[in-house]
Length: 321
Length: 129
Image 1 (tube, rainbow over the protein chains, first blue to last red):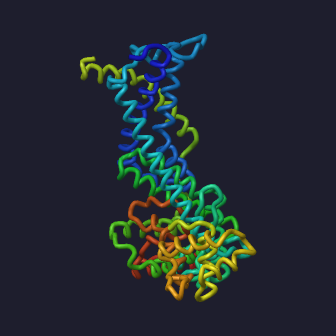
Image 2 (image 1 turned 90 degrees about the horizontal axis):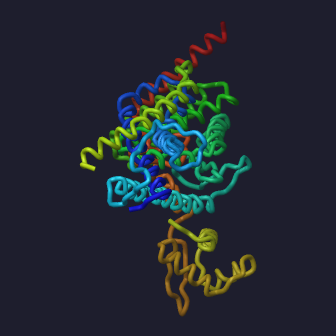
Image 3 (image 1 turned 90 degrees about the vertical axis):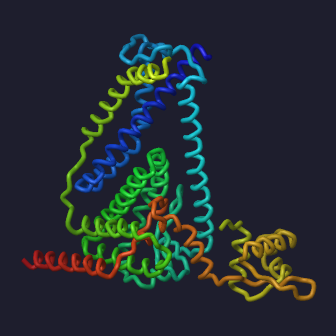
């Protein structure tokens, strides 16, 4: 058994783990029931909400742990203490208890997820480096790839670059190429590939169907944000929509046969339809305010902090201490 | 597919010429990169093992040539890189103008084209007013 400051630290970690797990459970239910409602909000609001949903278990977990530290003067020598978060036997920690088990399990799980995501990042980075080595940079800084497949994308994490294949370049008019360039440059400017990777790291802790929903929604929002950026230069929304449809048609032709999953096609259809509909029709959308964000975070933290002791006692009663 | 810097250069060289042995490759890179004949030989061997070069023994030396044309090879690299956004879990870490996983049928294309056409008609009416 560990006694003293180290025990307090491990107990705080235990509170952090329990809060994160509880928040993942609560947020998953909210996503399952309410994520579809998000479609009525503006693209910027949706982006904000999606980040909040993915980050909330961690942010609220850390805030609750922080409250536990300063509450009752457990760990930091603060002059005033407020004893509303109680965790009995905080001075003692046993790795063979359920606290120890939860901390060890969480540590192993987090390490595994982070390691697998990092491995994926480095693997993809190597592939992108190889691709870049065989590309020619054009006058506008786009990497031209000599290939028959018609596609364009932005890749790279710390220094993202835009790629377009010769097959697609040949099919585009100067106006359409400008639309595509503006879209891809926005991805590069905002470091979207790195953000996507980080978002997928956060959502990897949710159940698979929930993380898929979140990743799909974020993917759509990222593309829509880049679509919106084009509007700062190109006023003709129909040109953007036409280019989107044309590139999609060419890309589908190139990769026909690669895709076999019908259910995914259905989703993807919505993806393109949503982008075009949002561009042409649904510009007047609801906005999610900063005030609501703040309120949700504070109330979530307080609920978690206040219920920590109740939850603790509940489990200890079940395990007969 | 992971390729070292020298491997990429050697591959590019083979897309420009037809056939070469290790000595010819070495003499090509000797001035620009330096290095030794051994380094070139092991690079050619690695590219052969990766299936990117083919070789035939003529006399005492291997004659190497590219196994795939440039376009086909780059096409495969693109497939590798974009593989994750052809999967059904939307676990892509790339940002693409139009996801290649998006497969619309003709009916759906026509529906969207009509939407764009209607939008154009409405906006041109508003402009003329």
